[in-house]
Image (cartoon, rainbow, N blue to C red; front, side, top):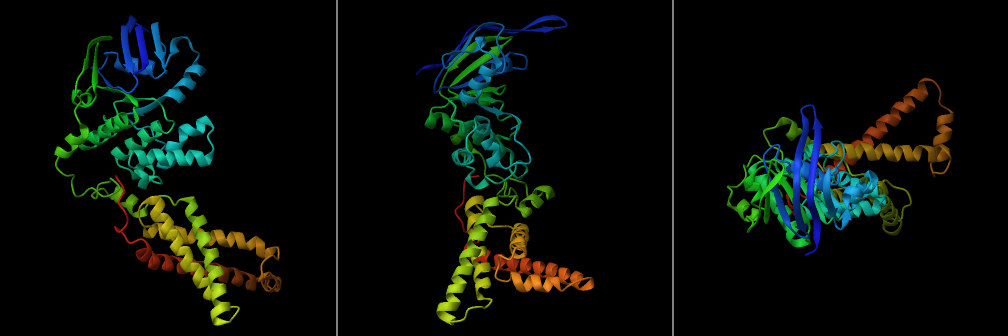
Amino acid sequence: MDVLIACRQLSKDYESGAGVVRALREIDLEIRQGEFVAIVGTSGSGKSTLMNILGCLDRPTRGAYELAGFDIGTRSSDARAILRNRLIGFIFQGFNLLPRTTALENVELPLVYRGVSARERRNQALEALAAVGLAGRVHHTPNQLSGGQQQRVAIARALVTGPPMLLADEPTGNLDTRTSLEVLALLQRLNRERGITIVLVTHEHDIAACASRVVTFRDGRIVSDVREKSVDAAAELEKLPPPEPSVVADGASGSDPAAEQRRRLGGPIPRALYAMTALGGVLGLGLGVAYCRAVLEVSSTPIPIAFAFVLEAIFAVRYAQKSMGRPLTSDQRVRVSLGYTLGVGLLLAPLTALGWMPWSKPVLDLLAGLSGSRLALALGALVLALATVTLARYLVLALVAPLVAPAGGGKKRPA
């Protein structure tokens, strides 16, 4: 295997009020492509300082550090940033996810910095989320995910640029035993199947045991470098008792009112769902008109509108099941019905005012003859009509949802 990381006589000094602090002392270390290495040590041992240098976040005071053949110590800050973006994926203890954006948008972020097109970003992010078992959670925000799922999003974000190396800084520090083993099993699988080099910093020896090589630091020096058979995290996970039944599908505890409310609300609505709803509406209108003319031999009835409502609901429910991995919640159905109705209204209003719609002339003539209290009455009737249409759409969605995408009847995705 090729050498990916080479540290030769690496030292790092810091100035302090008490004098010079020697954080690293003449470190010699080589890590080859495809290795899974754990760096272990107590607080102040130098492991975090080494991690900063390996991640191109800092420079050594003396000695040389080469990453994939590049001498990092001689490069400018901008050059190191480019190498960091191209060669390294970071995984942090605190996840470092943007709280108000979805898992998909969080994973897309490194690709934004690279200038990748929106479509390509989305495809690569979806692939990365699927690789970590979160294909059904792409539109969830961090507060709708469990700690383990948030760390999986962070791993997907680190993977999305296809780096040869992952640097994991205490990736299981905020996780319980079961979730820690799930994350470690995922890292082992990525190392084994994709050949990704993983350098994991931890102070826990049972976590380090999952690596195939353990490097122990003390007082800025390497005191041991051991290669041995790693503990299989997936096998250890199977030995644990089953999880508590109170844990709900989205990873939140059923006894937590805030988590239960988030589960009930269901999260944000994908923007593409509205486009799919509109496509269903257009197809429904076309089918309804064709049915009236070919079968009923009439030209104008409410039937095309009924066709449109049903096709809108079918398209919306099917797309939601595919993109979110679960049916729409009641709250989401309300938001879809209201948002889509208002959107259609805002689109049709200017088209009607410009005289481009079949009903434009009678509507405009009617409005031209209104003034004062009659105009206010007409506006009230319009609001009532919009509310009625919204309610009708909601009822159709509620009726169609159990038929098209029954709860619990879809294919379950990995959590």
